[in-house]
Length: 463
Ligand SMILES: Cc1cc2nc3c(=O)[nH]c(=O)nc-3n(C[C@H](O)[C@H](O)[C@H](O)COP(=O)(O)O)c2cc1C
Image 1 (cartoon, rainbow, N blue to C red):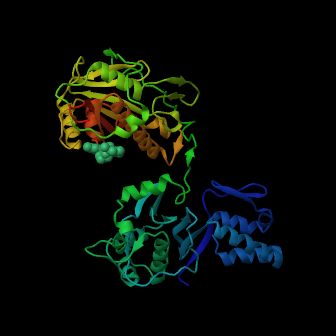
Image 2: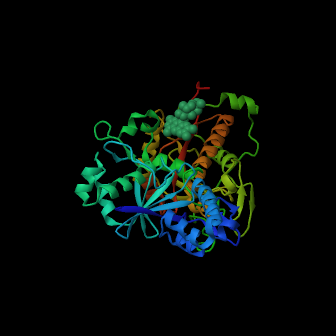
Image 3: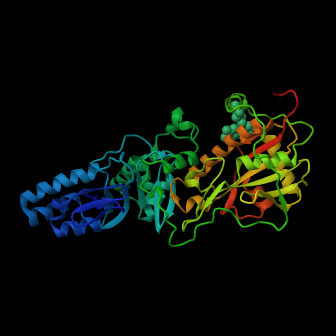
């Protein structure tokens, strides 16, 4: 035989005296743990086939031991804990590891007939010194251990048969077939479609997905990865947490007026009449209105300190009460306030002036105007920027999704307050990360734009 599979354990599997533990659960494995030491060593080293491991058990523990081995082997296989490494001529070529319960690979897995190409969703990246291929459609990842397989990946940009790949890459038919079977299990292969696209795009369910969206979707939910998830505080020992509120960004500040309890219709009236309003009046909103609006949407109501960066409570809800989103008013026209670019200090309820309306600021306002269907001249664009690390320091896998959900909470809070105050407002779903970085002079990986809300005085007759 030209190639075979040696078996190992998923990276997160570890044993205590009696238990088999993973990131996602544990079970009592004491009968299995008492079996042949040679079998355990080889399983941890991932250097023997299933038959070779079973032979150790038969020699060391007799037929009763073999029965225990088979029972636990089935459990570990069904629980997606076993990895399979393709070996040829004593060289390890690639390892497939399960990352979700949909994994069903085994030494007897078969490759479907016909030419294959790589799925457009398949991603190759490096992780801790390994080159791996993964696909958000699947439940496994493949570590590429031999450069010759990189050639196979390259040629799979277009449909190829096993024979053609074997010839082009100088590999045996059997090795190529085994590797493609791994890629098939990872859902990283598709059949030929039209115009170079894969067959997968004939499925409307898949055709609509962009690669980054599907990858993001599968990595911030559970099911298709075994990365740390939710509250893991993984940076506790390496970086300090960010505080609840930023240091002042400017020495020039403008205290904001506010009305604590502005007159308003009843909640349900406001709730019913709320709508997106893109028609602004020719007279701009006032500083008093802007201050009142920010006070009732973004200010800090309560602040608590702890050794994890603390929390604040504000008018809008926010994941973990972390509130990573800073608000930067880009003021084109506001009665009583000099036009320019500001940062809102939610603790002091004041504006920190950062710059005049530079050319880049005007470009940003132009973009905002286009995003609100070019219907009115912008008055104040409230740009939301996340101090990403506030969320990333605590949460793993779903940090960015929490940030975007926080943006949604802010949109809705702003829409309701704008409605109650008789203002006009539009959520702006797009943005320009580099333009914002230029205007704010912030490092886009530390703090970057994630949304915006345009606010203005309501045009008469548009109620
Ligand atoms: C996430 C999100 C992004 C939006 N982006 C924009 C936008 O970029 N431009 C715009 O004019 N309206 C935008 N809107 C407003 C929607 O078009 C509006 O909510 C929708 O048409 C429903 O109308 P309604 O708000 O009056 O109920 C956005 C709304 C949301 C919730």
